Structure formats: structure tokens, C-alpha cells
Length: 382
Image: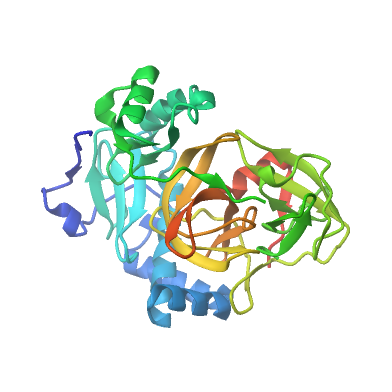
């Protein structure tokens, strides 16, 4: 187990109390955090879908005003993260459990907006990413070595390796030649499984299987939608569902888990199915760690959770997938490819995970923005 080397700026108790710092980021530093939140709330009134608000209040057991406050804080945090991503000393950003406080970690000076909590840590995000890149070089054999995945935990400033046993995890780390003090082995995990075969709408595949629609997107003006790469290889035809007829034009798996399916229908809707209607898709801004996120799938419908980590590598029996986002939302077979959305911001497509929607579990999604870039797609937005 690693030794945590996190020091809060100013005092050892600063994690519990927000501190103000002068900084040189753009949008988030122009005015106090409370003003930024107010601005986000005003902007939200124009786009927030009542169905999304209702779903969040039901899932989280909070009032509508509390849900709006959370979404506004998460929007502000997303802007701050975008401003800080390119800094060499940036080590991560996250929100606390109820999204009432934003934490920014760096290895050096104060680089946070007024009203957020600054945490000084030992390792920059770029340094931790370099180590996960080393692990990825061994990723092809990870599943056979009983290693299920790895990711950067920005809250503890280390790397978590998930394995069947502590010994399996340690052997994998030793083989990679990494400093063991920078790694935590988590052996209390289940083996991840692909979720086999309108965001969340069902489409049927050969062999009596099905997957879920991600997001409506065009390619060179042609209609289609994003989904998971493991749902079909290039050339696979849809057998049924609202999206049929259609065909997989682009598909990557393993390594990545994304695909684009062309369709004959031109009725592309910037919407995701919820438990009681639809929610609009306005953009693809990335939700920070700790944000509330919901997913839609053909098997289990509308389920919500929180973003737990970025850039997770997951070792399936069929191969390792890199660059995924880890969440606490549940999913099951047939939900693959379905939409993950935060507020009205599209996030990605369901890949796989562990557990189920009866007992809870962990679900991974492949991010949307890299998918748009990979295949030259244009997201359909409202």
C-alpha cells in the first residue's frame, strides 16, 4: 500500500475549509465562485430539461433546487478544469460527495480560483499518466495475469491497480518496473465484463443480441450514431430497432471501444431517453470527477451515479481498453453503447463493468470527444 503525500495549502486542516487564491486561469477566475455559480444557474434555466431534473432528484433523493445547485457547481468545475489542464503542475480536480466543494491539486504554487480548495501534492498528473502509459505496454497480457485494470486516483495522488489478489497486482507492478510506493493494489473488485451485446434506444444485432444507441452524430453530412466498438465490427448490419436499417462504418475494439453506425433515417434527435421522457443534448463538455452522471440503456433504462476516475484501462477477456471513464452508475448486458450524459453535456458510451443494477456496481464508458475526433463526426445538439 502506498504512502500518501498530500499537503493542503496553508495548514493540515485546509482540506476541510475552502481557501481563496489568486490565479491566472481565465473564465473561472474573473469573479468569485458564488458569482460563477449564479451565472451557471441562469444559463441552466435556458437548457435544463425537466426530465433530467426529475431523474436527478429521484436518484439522489434531493430537492430540485439542490439538484440545480449541484449541476451549476459541476459546470463551473468543468470550466476550471479546462483552464488548468495544460499546466505542468496540475495534478487533478474533483468535487466532494455532494458537489458542494471543488478541490484542485497541484505540485507547486496556487493555481486555483477564489473559493475552491487548493491541495499540494507530490506528483503532477502528467507524471502519473507517464506511469500508466508504462502499464499499458503490458496491457495485452494483463487479463491473463489476473489484472483487471488501472487508473489514476487524483484524490489520493496515486495509481490504483485492480487485480484478483494483492499478489497478482504486485507482480504486475514489479514487472512494469514502477515505484511500488506510487501504486495502491485493489483486490476487492469483480472481474469486469463487457455489456454485450435516442441515446439509450435499442438496436438489434445478429445472433439474437442487441446494444444501445449512444448519440446522434453525422459524418460528412451523413446521418448515424455513436455506440460501443465491441457491439459490432465494420460492416455489421443492424437487424432491427428504431435505428435500423444501419451499418457499422467505423469500429475500434479492443484498445478503444467506440464505433459509428450509419443509418438511413435522417430523423436525428439531440436527445437521450430517460425513465420518463427525454433529455436534450447541448454539448460535450467533460464532467469533472465527482460530478453526477446518468446513463441510458436498452436493458436497464435510466441509471445515475458519479464520475470516479478518468483514463482507466480495463482488461476484458477480449482485450484491454484504455482511456475510459469510471463511474458508480450500474448497467447490464444490452446497455452497451448507450449514452452517458451529465446535465445536458454528452459524455460517452457504455462499455462494460462489474456488478448489476440489483446489487450495484461499477460501469465504464468510452469518452465521446475522442470518438468524434477518431471518426470525423459532428455531434447533433439542440
